[in-house]
Length: 461
Image 1 (cartoon, helix red, strand yellow):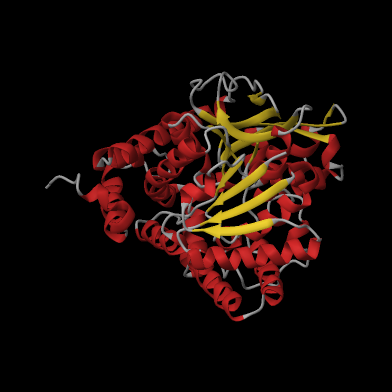
Image 2 (cartoon, rainbow, N blue to C red; image 1 turned 90 degrees about the horizontal axis):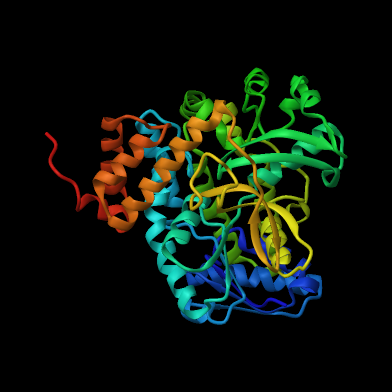
């Protein structure tokens, strides 16, 4: 029984989807109280109203409340789910525009946008985690907050909480692989390892039979593995690895950048407009009307994923998929529920999550957070051994992990030089002068959350 569950960042657009997933598993979770906390109490109330409508439609009786006190929100919780976007969608849009102006693709978790998000988020995520550590020391802290692997590593390093980082990217890839092969997901096993938004499938088996070669040899099947035209099948065949979708911003950085220039926008800029429309409609309508508005919003958002970066044109220019987003088999909410129900179960579940390495990937330190298959049960989260990384990707993973460590130090120490070094270490950026310009411009564009970097600036000219 989970008892009380708290969602930090409960005013975010994922919250109703998450509430739906939690209520679907109420027979296992047995949640007595669900509390939403957000710095925008108005948004939290809007999401709570949708949540209550969902609960009513599902016939589930649950106490669903909001509070402006983080301490009260988390006190006594069994699970704390954290999904915050510091600075909101406006910060993402600014970061992505800054990246584009420097000749790099604008994306929220990779490249300059990912660095800015990390530097902005680490201090706040640590503040939240320390409140949880004080008010609910036995809670499981499930981190959705991006960049998920880096934030999970920062919280592991600087708190004593029980933390799991989650992302739906691996599970989405596994489902698409099974669908391309025409096989049930339950009988398809994908061997996966890497970091968050930097992972690969190296082997696929169906009912114990290795079908990796069958998949790699078929360009048409490989094209079915992603929402948009991301990877040349020859790249996948030559790597002998199936990359998760965010590798697009490493393997095709210039293509992504040029498509953003052609489109005249980044996805963050388009989502900013879409979200403003959503919240205006939610404020104006009844909860029942709001739920239909929200469902249509998700359908439009999901169907457009990565199309702008991969194919140019507006991300929202095409008809949305006619699939009920509450019934989609993948998504953050599905992974969260798998993890939570696993942690309440005697029988282990295998889920890909972000946890301390503890020998899972031989090339990385035990304390590094990695994204690997884990056995999850009442006894905890145990990463499976995945051996050494293939040579074709080992250097990239080590470089990105070095960047993550340095970015965490930069945020903790509030250090301009370390922030610039993090960008230098990051393969997507990798140049000192560009790193300097980016650090300055990101700090100037966000004095509230990144202004601390400017205090460490020294004259270089």
